[in-house]
Amino acid sequence: MTLAAPTAATASPKQQRAQFEQLLGLHALLAVRLMRSVAIAAPDFVPVVSASLQDNTEALSQLVTTAYGGAQGDRFTQLWQRHITDLLSYANGVAGNDASAKQTARAALLADAKAYGSWLAEASNGRVRASDAAAGVRMHVHELMTQLDAYAAGDYANAYRIEREAYEHMFTAGAGLAKASITPELAVGFDAPPEKLRSAFAMLLGEHMELIVDTQRATFAGAPEFKAAAAQVNANTAALTKGMGAIVGPRKAKEFQSAWANHVEGLLAYTAAVAGGDEVGKATAERNLDAFAARLALYFSDIVRNELPVEPLTDAITAHDMHLVDHVDAYAAKRYDQALQLELEGYQQMLGVASTLVGAIQRTVKPQLPVGGSQTGGGGSAHHRRR
Image (cartoon, rainbow, N blue to C red; front, side):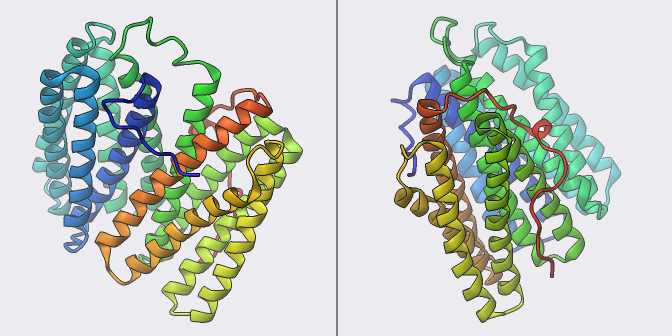
């Protein structure tokens, strides 16, 4: 049930799109977490997430090199490294409550956005306007700065809401970056409903994984932050439910919502048990997760008319659960390198599940295209346990 990523050199344009989406979405999340860790002085976590962000940059640079050529790949790497350096400068300004340092970093980040726009206009042979590309990066850096200001001020609701928006904006930017690297003739089908559906569900399922990670970590930070992170899990569930409704209708979408909410509840019940040192609670939560995985597998198999057998679907959902169970165990024990690795593996695995599931949906129920992103949600749908 996992999706084996092709090497950059052998990837088709659509596969490159999926890789750009994955890496850019992850960049936004890692940048958010690194900036917050710097701002609150979490020295044990900073080097681990910094290394993950560097790995992400190297993967992005390799993909850009494949898509745009070596010279443009080198220039992108320089621009992106400077972008990260200036984000860190802003975070250090927040940490030191230094308004002047923040303003200097802000100006540098806006200059970075302009430079990126010039780069992409040239690299794409004019298929993308410099002003449009620069505007996208300006929005990105504005979101990263604004979420950090909110987080440092204890406004966790806004910080986590903006984080989710930043992820979605960067994930969807992956399609544009991939499309700009090829001629219009090769881009045929790039924006067709099947590809949009795959992209929307990959974004939302990857986001689900990452928002659970956020909420697990926030459990150890206290109730206000936990509540803010959990609210975004609710919003993601609402978006997924709306997407399912466009495919299978409102009645079946309600079934999904109920099963998915139980899945979320089970993961957060396990997290609460870890935080409370409750071994009985952990065992109970794991048994419940097994039952929830079986129920979800039956649901997904049913909507694709049994094209995907229940057993491998159950295995895929259980693998997702285990990534998150093992992640919170590692995080609670302050094995941050292991926690980050499990997070990254879990994110990749969920994108593979999305691709497999959407493929089966396309072959069986021929859905209308659901609208992806923040606009699909609204209101909570899953209930969360709090410490």
